[in-house]
Image (cartoon, rainbow, N blue to C red; front, side, top):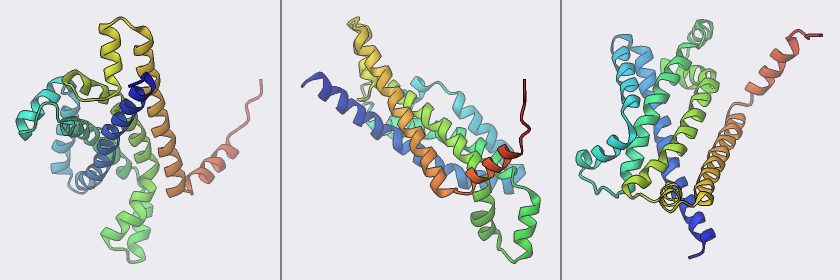
Length: 220
């Protein structure tokens, strides 16, 4: 196998391990955040637990998950589960803050025209919180792509292989290849999220332009 073929396969494996945690993290964190906003008494402890989860070091978590899930140590699912926990921990806090930032005027207006709580959430609160949620999702995307490399320490194929092999054999070019490809994947993910955000929230950019047009011009 040529070096290019190896790098390509490692990139595909890296992407395959990075996408599920980001998607699952978003799908789980939105309802959890909704619950924390609606139930402040139970929401506070949930946010604390989410914060504690993110403080757990990645390598011990990767080793502990096979024992908890009865999976093989080399099973890629262990990496997906660990990174999903980190994604949920990060996104739950940012999504809760985003939902809390929605103005009461908008909620009252939705109630006044007869929106049910469920419809108000999907058609008013979630769209207005969308830009903040997207910002949190972009952070999660970058952190997930970087953490996937740790899976190579326990034998799960990813670009982390280039780091380990390059360091062990003292091949600097191999290490830099892993770094460049990891950064490249993170940049592509971030660009895709930005484009998706513009398609799903087309009202955000015009609003930003209106705000910038009212900004005072500074002359030196």
